[in-house]
Length: 449
Image (tube, rainbow, N blue to C red; front, side, top):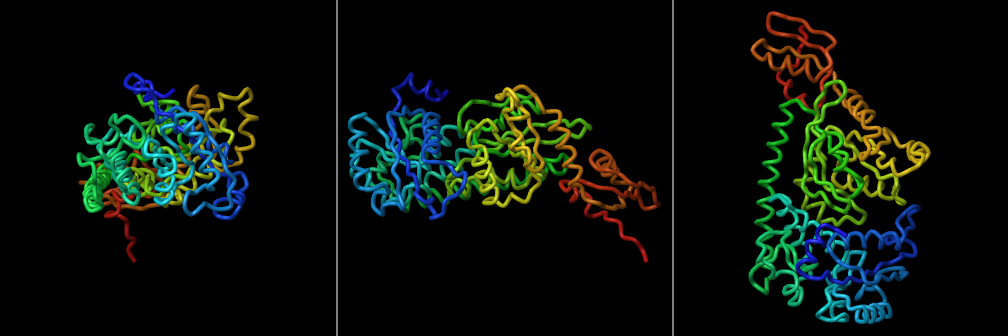
């Protein structure tokens, strides 16, 4: 039971949810993907998402389809069956595992009745994000994603259900159920013009956030500290790993999307190198496109990193499918070309950890660890240092004596092959991390003749 639900139950009983999944006969794009999620496995994950949102599952069903029904997504007979089950079980919410079009949502609401909300996986994830956005940046990003998701679905019923919440004043406040949290306004009927205006303001606010983050990253780079971003499927153990690497307090919970806002900590490697490690939002299969777009400010923490640690839960039955989903998301945000270490986490869950990860250890640059027990952490730190050093670029610079701090920075962060004191300053031949090359760009040495 999630922490959120425990809090919520003191105020009101949890909403009852019924889940609907689809088993595509040849895959949603007409092609069968070996190793892809089965409908049952995907519904299991949807149930965990619903639990994280504070819902109680009362039933679930799956239908085999070649393609979505244009009107109701699932077939008419299945719609009638679900409507009857929802009535019998007293469900308040019907959650579809795939994204519904606005038309699907409207037609299904007509069938299920005005007292039953219809949402899809995207809407559910947005609701969870609203709960876990604890900073202004996170709240802005969630609010933007919610408005863009809801705009094409706006109806009188949807407006009253989903956009009448302003009492809490920000995304993530207590609202009494899925579909009610989020941006909201004091007016019961928001027209599209008002929403588009709000979206425009949110985008301007987020541009300011992005500019602030860019300045923050620039300051970090001037400090000469390499940056490492933790990426991975949600609940793979990123926050636990950050805690173990840095010995710092980090919020950890055994639930999906426990961490939404980026957290950065200093970590010292075996050779004395200090790095900055950032925990980022977890990925998930069927990640909504609007979330990738709305969270651009946060995801830039990944794209601007010197190195990615891809944290993989090797105890999960769909390890490879989760890993594939992460790499697909990295491609979407144009971060797949960055150096990556695959961190095979949770080996403590096996009697024979070496045998358990043997099938996965052929992944390039992989290290098996337990973020809980600390097994393999020293090896991981050493490998991080090796990879960062391997990513260093050759450089030859002539640093004026008045810029002695750059000579010190080269000694601290670089590898020096030759150092010579000339009348004009200190000439150094060596290698530097890409992250601090810009500090030396005005002092590249030009050979005469």
